[in-house]
Amino acid sequence: MRWTLPNLLTVLRLAAAPLVPLMFFFLSRPLADFAALGLFLIAAVTDWFDGYLARAWGQESRFGAAMDPIADKAMVIIALVVITGYSGMNPWLILPATVILFREVFVSGLREFLGDQSRLLKVTKLAKWKTTAQMVAIAVLFLGTGLKYYEVGHPPLVGETSLPWSSSWSDLATQVGLLLIWIAAVLTAITGWDYFDKARPFLRDPDAR
Image 1 (tube, rainbow, N blue to C red):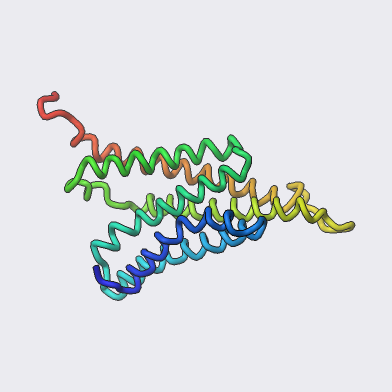
Image 2: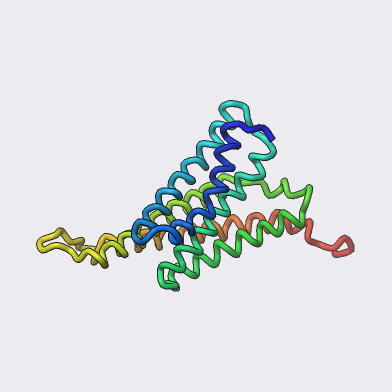
């Protein structure tokens, strides 16, 4: 493996994934929520930069191609587990999170089974949009959990501006985040079916008609 800047960014993003829950282990809330949000946003930005720089500088590599989607999945899955736990096991979050987790496990299993033919399941543009939607949704949800914890300890001041469409800024962030995670779940399911459809010819037994 060559230690190019794109590969280094990918490795750092992969290493950052387990740091998300560690924020809640070492820091008090809501600082932990906002630290996790910052860490997640940095990881999301590097996700765009490592691919862009690798193409622009002619530094694309097999290591980067393999580790980049793994880093994305690690960040998304670990962050979803953390958010689901700190959201009080909200069923409106559990269902799309389950769809996302199931799809990631399913597609990873397909790729492992196909082996050398897994190149047929290369990342599509819709899959890239799916990842972007997931990361934006998770970032907004982290913002919602942090604001919620902050608002509990800091009651609104007299005369403070209220929102006509939501009871608080944390509720607004949570509602937007839930909407985005449902959109991400739909895109995730669509891409999962697309990969399964491409893999179906290789799942049939040789003597099957």
